[in-house]
Image (tube, rainbow, N blue to C red; front, side, top):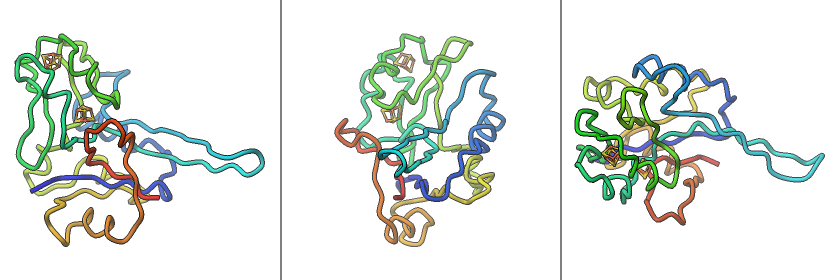
Length: 177
Ligand code: SF4
Ligand code: SF4
C-alpha cells in the first residue's frame, strides 16, 4: 500500500475550504495550518496564467525529516504516511530545517506538527477532511498500488508534476497540469 494525493491545478479556485476543514478536523491552533494555498502567476502582461495549488506535506518516499529526527518521533507508518508522535518530540526543530517544503510547524504546545493524510479517517474508510470538503473536487487520494483508486486513475489520465523534484525526496503529492 502506498498512499498519495493528486491535486488538480486546473480546478482549484483557491477558496481555502481544504485549509479550514483540516484546521477543524485536526484541532490545528488558530494562526497555524497543515495545508495551505499557493498562488503562482506565470507569463507577461497581458498574457498571464494563474495557478492555484493546495499544498501540504508530500509524505515523501525519501524523508530527510525522519532521518534527522533524533528521538524517532518523526516516523513512517503503513502506506508511507509520515507522522510525528507528539509525546516523543522534543521540539528541536531538526525536521523543520530538513524539510525542503516547509511542511511542518511548531505547535504552541511544544512539539512539531504537520499533515497526517488524515490517517485516523482513512483507517475508518473515510476520505481525508480536505478531499471531503473540496467544492470543485480537485483533490484525489488513495492507494497508488490499487490500479482503480482515484489517485491511480487520475495520474494515468493526466499530466502531472511534483514540487521541487530536485530536492530528491520523491514527494507523493502530485499536481495535475
Ligand atoms: Fe518530510 Fe517535508 Fe517530505 Fe513531509 S514534505 S515527508 S515533512 S520532507
Ligand atoms: Fe524529531 Fe520533534 Fe526534533 Fe522534529 S522537532 S526532529 S519531530 S524531536
